[in-house]
Image 1 (cartoon, one colour):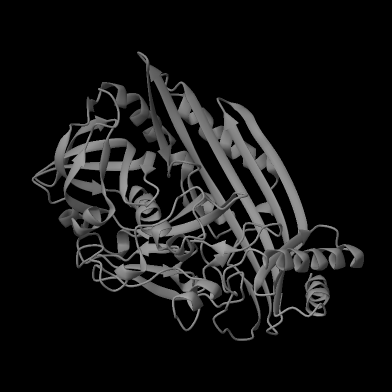
Image 2 (spheres, rainbow, N blue to C red; image 1 turned 30 degrees about the horizontal axis):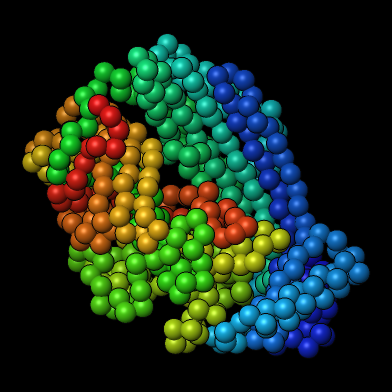
Length: 484
């Protein structure tokens, strides 16, 4: 693959471009699902190709190919240059890149057990055992389970002289139980909704999740929700589990800090952003205990946003986004960093494959742990605790939002009491984070994986990471999203 990347780089560079980079990518993928005791989806795929990005005539050009013959590579390089030339007719200003160094490196994400070394029938049998455990509860109408594995090797080469070889192994698994009764569907998922938990690990993650052991409890909760009281409407102290808080971070912090949205060059899927440039260093994004980082470094944890170098050859970094409640940073690329006067990109450019142009994408956007014990987080005289996302909605500036969860509990004097069904809450992003009064410590912090973040046109689906501990927010509007 290194030879292919260097061959493509040479094909682009000899055409007289200002700058060029190449990503040669090989991907292996496996997905297994079950539904009510039967295999649902069992598939595997492999892909190999490369993408060539050039800067010429002050404009970007990009082309990709899976024809890896010398002729195919030369044709892709020529097309990338033609696209840059065509852009000259409409561009307003020349692209300028923040400076970056030359790197030669090789990195492989930690993986104790290669998931592709485990036979498919063994993985399917493990899922069917979970499926069976869920359906032992007669109130469960539908049981669903899944596993998903990916190995991605990428070789990056640029005219700066960089040559970077990275391999990332990603695993994910989870299950859900649905219960239908009297015209109502209730659902419980584990360890999270929308596919479960995903991390940059091998098959060892499956054992760490204790899926089979949690199946009876999840089935019981799905059925019990039918008899639970409706989540009350009003203003209450709201306590969120770490998985729901991860999605809150994703939607109300992660997307609005993407600098291409702020500058207006990206608006697909998630809209633009309320975090205009004049708010940097001035906006009180949250209370003084709220600290958020954008951290792609392996030391941060095995997140889906973890790597050694981004897709522009910029080293992984940790950057403050919110410090002591103050908004202090965006996620940038080499181009957008230069546009706002930053000396360097903070390394957030990624593409979901060889056929797509890199975009600014979330790495691991995480809420740092607090100083409170879990008992202090729950220390509310009257509150509501919510777990596991069910639905979300947020406006195209990432400002007004509404979230629904799968299950809730009434909290009185620091203790969980009655179960609540159809819990939901709503608010304004900055008001919400400014209402944060307690965040649990490191021992309760989890780095969650979101494997299905969409951005761009054509759409790119990317994995991101979000670390969080359970936290409490004062006087949040709850209820109202689902009928009683």
